Image 1 (cartoon, rainbow, N blue to C red):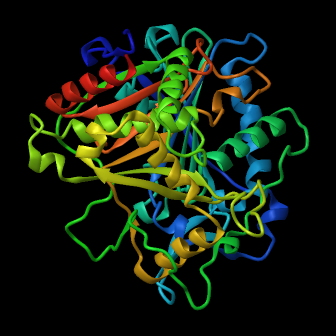
Image 2: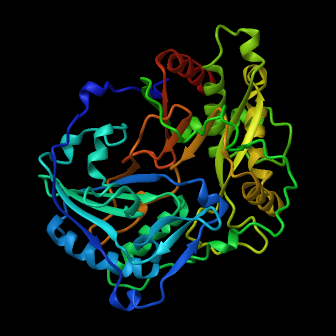
Image 3: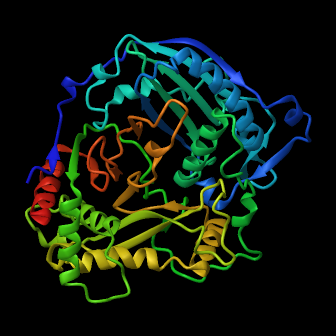
Length: 452
């Protein structure tokens, strides 16, 4: 069916031959620094996301904006940006009195690094394929700073021999979710053009503060307590060898999956969306990749899929669309693997859709209050992390839109990523899975069986 390709890592550039030219800090303006120092509250959603997210944004050559010119205007624009996103120049701290993380908005600075590669942008080959070497285009730890004083935000601009360049951005996940990071990029683009902010940010994280007293009014099967040492978080990396495989789905294939699901849908309350059918497909394939020759004991085991849902418009009152924090909760669907093997595809799509529909204002508040009481984290068999429609590559900078934008991918076998295509089918999607070889073979088999 031509929906999958796997490129041997030996064909990828293992070393991008990047040389760091300068590493420094960018500080807020003097006027901002003279304001009273304060701490920024972090919600219970923010609290569990204390890890770095690294993205790379590749740009073709623009003769009016060579990398050295871009470097200068970026520095200036980032100063203006951290004046309004003041937490980006702060430091993450543990508040010993509350036992919670918060951000000390102390103006200690954001990282800014300039670098150069000995290659051209074309030499890098397929930008969609997860090349571990892309980590060389991002700085998350400044070597001259101790581990407990690292910036929450670091920017690296790497120039290529062709005149193109890459913007590598590392942010601690406590600072942004995907939607608010997209808004940040749009605001940065307007500042680069010396225009007012397109969307002034709302930095008030107390809008997602737990109720007093906390009230857990729903069962939260998607969450597990930290005290349960037998459970591990899906965000953890693994040292075992994993095969990477990208499964390409065209808009036509997604449409056929939607039609297939609609044929056997038992309820009209769940929408058959592109995301729901792709997520249902991933869930089925991941669950059945763990089944040994349809052994009954494996089929009887329960499988739980997790995915993020934006709650800005689901709360009462609604959160501002400009809310900068993590305004996402983990939706879930669970079923025995036997059901995922035998049920019609439409029923699996239905279960996925029911997970999103479950998240009302009261459910969201209950989940936040659960975090207040139990200090837990999401847990399931597989997490679908979607970068598909975030639109990072649609941001218009003075030098044009990115050729491609992507996260730096690490070894996480329980996370399946959804990416947009590059220079192709705008409504298609790339499904990136990383699994042990034996499981990958089964995943691919079930993928092709379901799509065909």
